[in-house]
Image 1: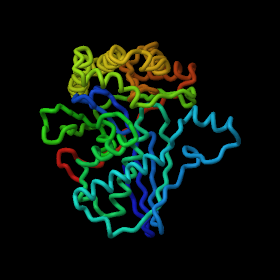
Image 2: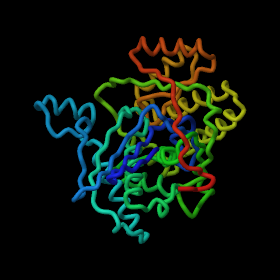
Image 3: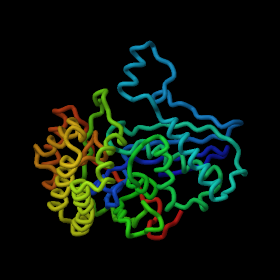
Length: 361
C-alpha cells in the first residue's frame, strides 16, 4: 500500500490485493496462515478536500443510470446490489468512532470527497473489499494527521470492524497482509495475546524464498457470485458450537501454515506443493464442494492435469498454483488454462510497508 499527498491536500492511497498461500481460512478461527500482498491488482482511493463530506460513486461499480431494466438486471446479477461506496462509508464511520473513543482529535482537518477505482477482479477471493477499506483508512489517517495515534498494529482490526458493519464475515489475514505488505506468516492462536482477542504474532518472510506462483482466474466469470460472509456462515456456527469435525479440520488447516513456513525456509518445493493440495482437500471436506464452487474446483483440476499444485486464494473464484516441475510445467499450465478460457499470470509480491517485529506505523 502506498499513500501520497499532493500540493492541494489531495491524498491518494493504493492498496494491493492479497493471496492466501496456506492455512486460510483458519485465521478467523484462532489458526495460522501464510499470505502475500499481490501487486498484480490494486484498489485506489482518493481524498480531496471539499466544502462538505461527499462520496463519489464509481461509474463502473456504482452506476446510477441504466439503459433500461435489462441493463439494471445484468449489472445486479454480475456485480450485486452494492458497489464500493458502502465500504468507504463504513470505514469512515469506524475511523470516527475509534478516534472519538480514544480522544484522538480530528478538528484540524476539514471535510473531503472520497472516490475510488479498483481493478481487483470481483468474486475471486483476492480481498477487493478489504483493499478498499485499507486504502480509505490510510487516506483518513494522512488527511487528519493521526497516523502515529493509530499505528499499523491497530489498523487491520479497524478495517475488519468496518467490514463487519456491512455483514462481511472474515478473519484478520487479508487486512494484516494488506496493511503490512510483502509476505507474512500470521499466527492467531488465542494463547499468544489474550489481552487483544483476534490479534496474533506476525512475521515478515523474505519474498525471495518464494518459488514462481501463478494466479488462475476467470476474467469473465458467470453472473452468479458468492459473498465471503455466506461462505463462512455454516462452518462458523458449527465451530462456535464446538462441532468436533469442524474444530479438528480447522486445526489441521492451521497446521499447514506452520509446515509451509518450514518448507519455504528449507526451499522444499515438493513439500510446499503437497501442503497446498492438502489445504484444498481439507477445505472441500469441511465446507463441501457446493460451497467451494464448481468454477474454483475446475481451475484446480486444470492445474492438477499438468501436475501442478493448487489451492483457493481466498473464499473462492481463483486459485494459486505452484509448478514444482519448472518452466516446462509452467508452459503446460498456461496452455491448459488458455484452452479453458482462463487467465494464468505469474504473481508479483507487493513491497513490505511496515515491520511487524518493530510494530512501526
